Image (cartoon, rainbow, N blue to C red; front, side):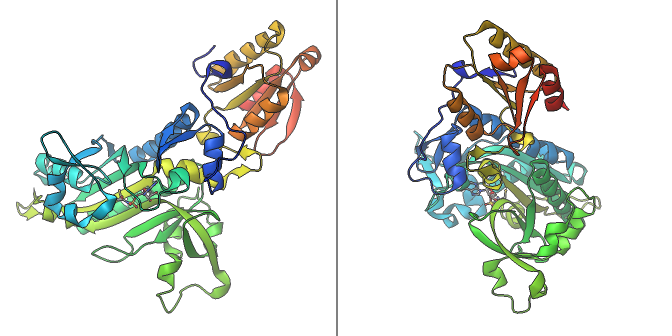
Length: 434
Ligand code: 5CA
């Protein structure tokens, strides 16, 4: 067996037949039923093997687009000393959402809800000159927020995985360029995940202007209601001009929109949908650098307090958001980019040597083509195997059995469309790899 592939008989995929009580929205139900996650405490989840593969693929796409935008990856710890947050003044301001911990020496610690203070302290201690500016640093790390109402599974968890990036610039032009680079990176990231995200103007920071945006995936179960110019729906995300176009078009959270008297969009073009916030970017200027005494020597010798922004993506929330956007009555429909395996292989007779041999050959050939396979070699009934594959939602399902083999064929099914074809083994592989 190739390392890309897994045998279900030796895997860990605890699927549930019944919809678990208390799971209100479809992504939460399907994540539990398809064996992606298990709740271990309110708002805290273990990622089971299948879920972890999805989470890793989402993180890889996020990482790729951050790197492409010039951001540099690092890794900061989850546990932070309270003193850092006393420097910025946020330790007392943050409230009960912050999980506060004391170590054995009685020192105040906390489980980080975000990392502005820590990254600013590290950058301040290492960078003294304009020569080492500008920089954008990021990490992908677990956060903890003791949410009043953790709900909807990983959508609003207490522990959740976030990509958070932080930009440091010498002047406003630079800060705007850093912000724009992230804005573009976010659109590319969501497109690469197979999602269409709407950038929504958010209440802006200290400087005003258009330097705070939330990114929403449209879904009826979204927690926020947004108004937007329906022209947004027709923008071609692949077009290099898309970021500029999207930024010009109007989108606003309903709550804020209500406060604005004159809406710039004619009523017939105004759309109203619910959205899931999967990203949030903000410019906040010298808020932390000033409070924490960071100064850098400029080209002319004068000391400058760097201007900063922070840029978050809800990596674990995205797993839920993708399912909200892509499922049917039978289960999840993973976009190819993030599917835990490329192919589900339903072996109708694992006890028959010829069928097993054909399945093994298929695994090996798909592996050569770089495709991963989840091979159901268990003794379960065919109906149960098909139901599990539909639930788990892998892009392709290949069914191999004695009848087909006698005729020289296997069945290939596209999960997204339900389209089926009887093909030779070779043709099936070519279709999947092509
Ligand atoms: N410091 C800033 C940017 S790095 C920040 O923390 N922004 S945030 O609060 O908006 O969070 C960034 C993203 O994390 C959100 O857009 C959302 O997608 C995700 N997120 C926030 N809270 C949760 C939560 N409780 N569960 C799951 N994801 C969350």
